[in-house]
Length: 588
Image (cartoon, rainbow, N blue to C red; front, side):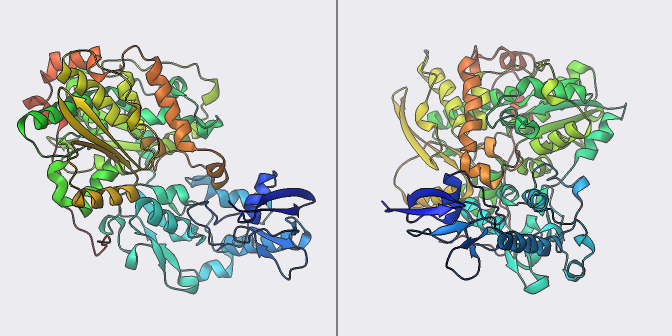
C-alpha cells in the first residue's frame, strides 16, 4: 500500500496515497478540476491540457491528471494564469469544432460545451481560419453509427475505449497536423472495418463526433401518416436509464412515465419487449434441452446481443453452429407485430409501422439484416435508442417528470420477472436456468441463480440438472469475449450454455443508453445502479419464470402451437453466416 503524503490544494490540506494524481487528490476534498480527455481507467494520457494546475516552486503549469502528489506540495487550481491558459486551450479546440448545437445528439450531455460555458469562451470560432484549414471526414455509411471529424477534439478517448472495452482497436489516429482524424484504418467504412457497433466509443466521446445514426424524423413522419398504425416496443433496460435524460438519479425506474410519454407522443399501440424476452426463453430453452437430450453442438451460445452476433460472424465464424438460432427479443417482437398482432388489429403487415426503443446502437443494423423480415416487409421498421426517444420527448415539450405513470396494454405487454432481467449481464442465463431446470426436473426449482449475477467479466457456474452436470458461463464486453473465446479453444472443460453480451454490463450499459459524464463515471457504478432497477422489478413480480407467463401461453395456444414448432422457426428463428472485413486481425 502506498505511503500517505500531505499537501495543500487551494488552501485545503489533504492526506492521500503517494501514487495518487493531483486530479484525484483534489476530487477527494471536493475540488473539481476541469478535464476533457481524461477518462479514468480508460484514457489517462493528458492530451488536452485542460486540467493544468500551478504547483508552487515549479516552473510552468502541470497536467493534474498525470502529475503525482508529493510531500509538502502546494497546488493552485484556479489562479489567473491557470484560468487564462485553460481558456486559451479551449479556444484552440473550439476553433477546430463545428458548432451545430441545436441539432447535435449531445445537446444535453456535451462535456466540451459544458467547459466552454464554464470558462465563458466566445462562440465565434466556427469561422476561424484554423477551422477552415481542417480536413473534414464524415463516415456515414453504416446503419448504426456516424463518425464526424468536424466535431472531434482529438482527445483520444474513443480510441482507448475501442481498444480496452471492445478489445478490437478499430479506431485510431491517422495523418498529422490539421489533417489528423480518428477513424478506421484508411477511413474504411465502419461496416467494412470489423466494428461490432457496441457503441463504447460513443459513450467515451465528450462531443458529438461519434454518435448513433439519428432517425427521429422517421418516427415524426410516421406519426403524421394516417395510413400507418404505429406499434412501439420498449426493451427492458430502457426503463432503468431513460430517467437520467430528465434529471432523475442514476438507477431510477421510470417505467410508468416512459409508457405515458410514448402515449403523449401519439402512439397508442405500446408493447413490452419483456414479453418476447419471456418468449425467447421458451424458444432458446427448448433448443438447449433438445441439444442436451439429443447430442447437439455445445456450448450453445445465446443470440440476444447483436454486438456479440457481429463479433462471432466476423472473428469466430467457426463457432456459428454453436449459436442459438433464435432471433433476439426485438426481432421476435417485430415478427409477431407484423403477423399475430396485425391479425388481432385487423391490419395488413404493410400498414403497420413497427418501432423499437432500444439501449443499443447495434440493434439498428440488426433490424436491417436481410433475413429479418418476409414478403417484402421488415420485422422492425425503425430502431431508436434511449437517447433518441429522450430527445424527441424533450423537443415535443412533454413534461416527463409530471406525467402520471401508466402500464402498457394489449396482447404483447405482459411479462415475468425473468423477462425483465434480460437487460443485465447474466439475466438471460438466469432466466433460462429458471425455466430449463424446472422443465427438466419436473418439479418446482429455485428462482434465484445468483452465481451468474454481478459484474465480473467472465462468470462460471455448474448446476446439476436432472442428473446432468451443466457448465454455464456468462461473458460481457468485447475484451472479455476475446479472452473467453481464446480460453474456449484451449480448455478441456465442456461448457454447455454460454450467455455473451457485446456490452460490458449488458444492455443496461448499451451504446444507445444516456451518456454519463466522465466525472460521474468515476463517482458511480452506473452498471450496478441500472441493473438493480431490473432485479428489483423481478423480485416484486408475481411470476418470475418465463414459462409461467399466461400471455406467452396464449400466443402458443392461439398461434405458434408450441416452442420450436414449424411456425416458431418460420417467424422467431434465423440463421447466421461468416462475414468478412478488410484486414483487422485479433492476436493469436
